[in-house]
Image 1 (cartoon, rainbow, N blue to C red):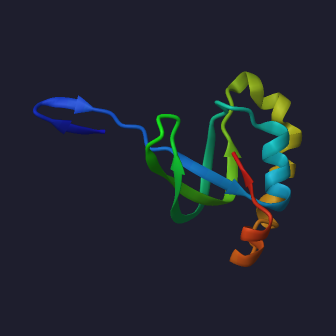
Image 2: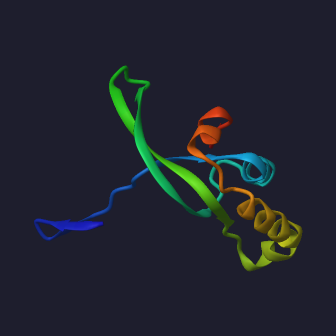
Image 3: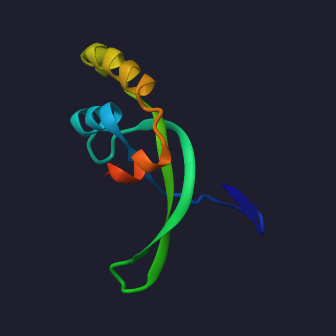
Length: 107
């Protein structure tokens, strides 16, 4: 968010988040489009792609080391099992860059 000419302007910056191994399995199992998460990881090089309008773009990439699922109080009880699974997946998420490139899952 920034101010220009006295007007507050809000911009959204999108990231492609890549996960691996158990972390990827848990994200695939428990996340859906629109899920709110907090991600900690390493920023990668932007990846080029062609948009629906035929123009070239680049997307920011984040290699996730930890993904925290953000839930409401009413959803907390349903996610108790998930807490243990995510802790184990985060501990196992430290991999080499070669391993990352070999087995990625995009969200």
